[in-house]
Length: 278
Image (cartoon, rainbow, N blue to C red; front, side):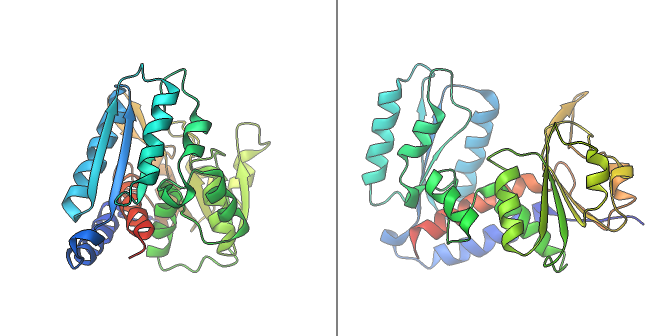
């Protein structure tokens, strides 16, 4: 068996084209607005923010980027968020993570009004996600669900294993899979017999941040494998999944790069449109 590729780049492009078509028909005062705050000069964060700004411009979203020095005081950052909360033409607010040392991540995220929390990180939106209420879903897990749906495989009743328990990917994707009637197991660094657990899964989501951690002998024949990892090894990008051996066992697999990554920004744009309430 050789797995079919789930082309995240193609699916993300389709999402963005649909949004562009919708936004092009809006009046000027209806255009969704996205505010992105970047504190410090972390190179990776600067690249991500640039990509978000470029994509927003391409599809017609009004994007503002606030670039602040790493020495920015907590009170000043909270004051900016407060002003954006009150701005009627800003529908989504995103604070690029990680923040420089000395800034309280949780306090910053909580300062964003839940109805403008485009990342879905506010405790109110996290709670809504877990109880199955309408909520803004975090962008990467939301993109993963779109990739799974693209396969045409019915998710209801499937056994899913999520490897990684971060609040950004692992926990929210588990909640979203549960809402689609999967039986979900979350694995982590202290899980006993993790390979045995993974081999039970119809769906494996690898988000552990360890290059080539998931190997072919951990995969049930015919499983769907979603690789969230982005790791640089010997100058090239690899995922958390050892692609060659896993693709020999799986039915569907996401590549790295070109799988989950493009979906994150596409879902950010979709969330911004959603929060505009058009």
